[in-house]
Length: 257
Image 1: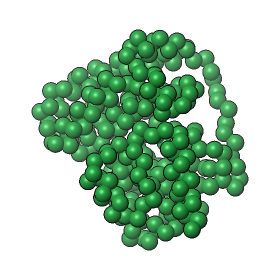
Image 2: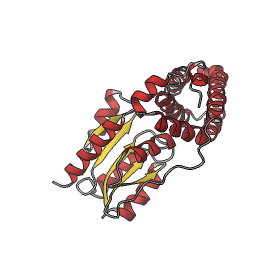
Image 3: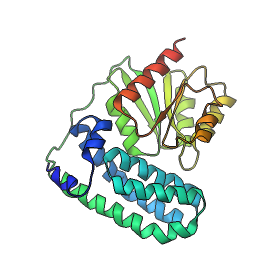
Image 4: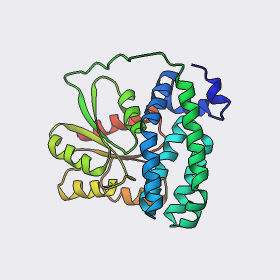
C-alpha cells in the first residue's frame, strides 16, 4: 500500500506507529476504524439533532481517541473542540461547527479507503488459543480499542469484549469465576463505567476480579472519582502495547494475592 496517500493527506503515521508498533497493526486498525465510523457518525448526528449533549460528548470523545491512535491530527483536534463544547452544553458551537467536523471526517474516510484499496490480503492468520488461557474482559465502545487489546496480548490470554456497561455486567455475571481482570472504559453510552464500578461495589466483586480503568479523560476529578473504588490502576488513552501488557500483568498479580 502507498503510505504517501495518507502522508500527503496530513496523516501523522509516525505518531500512530509510536502507539500501534508496526504497519500491520496500523493497517488492521484502519480497517477497524472504517468498519464502525459510519455508524458512529450517524449516532453523532442523531444526538446533535436531539440536543442530547451528554451522549454527543461521549461519541465525539470516542472519535477523538480513535483519531489520535491513527494520526488523524486535524480530526482529533476538531472532535476535541466538539467534546469540550458539548460537555459545557454549548449547543450553539456544536450546531455552528458540526459541518466542519463531518467534512473532515468524510475527508479522512475517503483517504483511508483509497489507501486500503492497495491491500490485496484476503485473510489473516487466526490467533492460536491456549486452552489454559486467562480471561480478560475489555469494555469500550470503540472497536479500535477492543481489537487493539486483543491483538496485543499473547496467546495465553483470551480477550472477551463488551461495547457498553450493560453488556459488561452480563458477561461478569456469567464469568465471575473465570475472569482474571477487566479493562473498563468510563465514557460510554447507555451504562457507563462508573455504573459498572457501582455494580462491582454492590456485589463485592473487587476482591474477585481486578479492575483497571481505561479513559481518555485525564481530568483530576475523573481520576479521583475512579480511585474512590478499589481499582488496580488507570490506563490513559491512547495507550501503547507495553502499557497494556504491563497493566494486565499487574492485574493478574493483584488477583493472585
